Length: 203
Length: 129
Picture 1 (cartoon, rainbow over the protein chains, first blue to last red):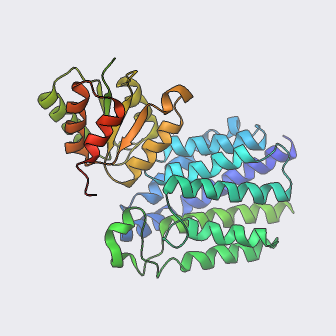
Picture 2 (picture 1 turned 180 degrees about the vertical axis):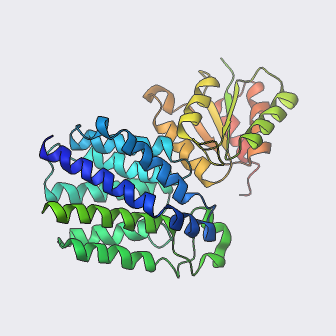
């Protein structure tokens, strides 16, 4: 296996494992302000991607990412499927086969814009965007330290607590959504931490 | 001109099937009609794959109007529409209307031979402006 394929395999495995390990926590977060299916949905999606690993991993980055995105779209169920699926699909569309750091940052921004359009949402509405946007802003500002980027993501998760939800099921709760962490924000930060850990190990 | 098709997308297969039963009884069988409900594991939720299949089953050259329930049903429906072949994408719409009443009204309008745009607007008149 070439170096790219080894990295793709490690990343997919790490992300799927962290979602699996935290599925109950994500479900508990979602039970507080949503419909309680976020953990199980995300787990089903990444289990399906991992099961297809032998097919996905040898593909170049764009096709690999599109493959992961399509699996999430088809298998997750619930709004997080199209949202996270759109993120990976757009990354795949935007990245060249041999991406450099600038390509990656630009593709992440494009993927976030696509997620915003898909969810008809923006920053400050207690969603995964409240984690993704601060992280991409740090990347755009030139932050390359993985530990600090994970810190940005985790801080952003906690910052969703006082927000009153405006989008998604949590918005039905109005003020009662205040005081709870957004499950999609938490799963985004978990994935970011898993990716960072793998990148640290290969660096 | 063919009749606009109707697709009902609910988190619950029972809700979707029940709404479809009401359409059949109140409007009849000349309108192409399909429904789907439940996530890929059979729990409550929606599935892009199932939505695509339902659109295919209710397909009409006049287009297809989707009636959906909560959040994820809408997001998954929009995702499914984008995954259709380019020539079909512009002929499928999500109606911003209550799922049961919207399905019956949309099907009634479709049965009368109205265009997709009119079917959608009639269903959407049910939503508070």
